[in-house]
Amino acid sequence: MRLVLLGDAQSPHLLKWARALAPRLELWAASSRGFLPEFDDVIPPSRRLALQTSPRFEGGNAALLRCLPRLVAWLRPIQADWLHAHYLTSHGTLAWLAQRLGVRARLVGSAWGSDILVTPQRGAPWRWLTRRVLAACELTTSDSLFMADRMRELGAREVMVFPFGLEALPTVTDPKEDGLFFANRGLEDIYNPFRVLDVFAHLSQGWPQARLVVAHEGALRVPMEEKVRAMGLSDRVRFTGRLDAVSQSTLYGRARWYLSLPRSDSVSVSVLEAMAHGCIPLLSDLPANRELVTHGENGWILAEGASPSMDELKPLAARGDVVGLYNRQWVGEHALFPQAVDQFVQRLVQLQSGGSIPPR
Figure: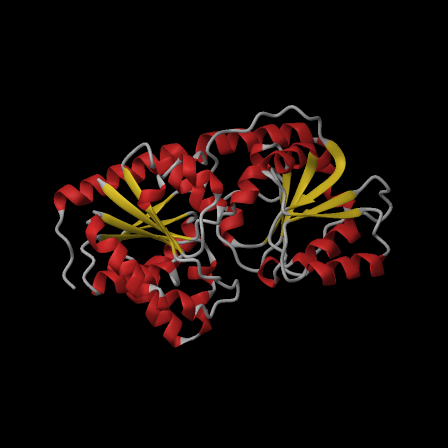
């Protein structure tokens, strides 16, 4: 079976899909940008196409559509069985249009979160486009039950649900630092990073040992740094920028608490990573987060505008090691990626053997 990944190969998330799929089928890949160096160990350069566009986080990526003729010309001789688009309102649109222009591959799509939970709310044209892409995909994947329901409401045909989990459980060696908070989401508005600062400031009152490490990059980093200085927390909040895998794992391992407070989200890989390292997650009140955390038992769900006090979190803090072990075991049982990809590939084989290419 021959499958072409279509997505942003500068993303470690697409790299993880590639690593999981490569041993199971003949894998090709087209990237809207370039490729991370690690792809060299997964897919030969002869099976890759880099479109070298510069997608913007906020959308409006017309340059990607202008690459359609080049993509179609590259896809036609491959004669792939499946074209697998990641992020449905950009790469999914490319895949749908490529099929309409004669690429004889069947479509499968993977939703990443805001492509389903945010983009269709921008207006009727976006909802129409999302519906067309979902209808064109014989199979789609979602990493949460909540998002899968939204996809079905928008016309998805068949949805497989599994967390975009870890490739393996990490080794846990470092002792936890009870006052260390870690945040590792993009510094963009949708991830609500200013609320992360506000919640930490509230929790750290009267707690001199409390510290926050903010990883990642984004458009809001500079104003966030300015706010930290204005709050008088410069000696307690550290910005690291993007971290390599080893540094990130070290911080997950040392942090007792993990803060993730986006305005909209599906099941977050970073939250799963934090749980696998035994962190206690403090999460915004979103349906997908409630699929991971039972409030007050293995983490804390923050209602909109709420900031818990440390007195409220003391019961969780007192059971910190037990809670961390439970979270790690839960990830091991429910959120390891290779097992899920096995089932995904098996379903593709079933569809390939039992159905024909859909009419145009």
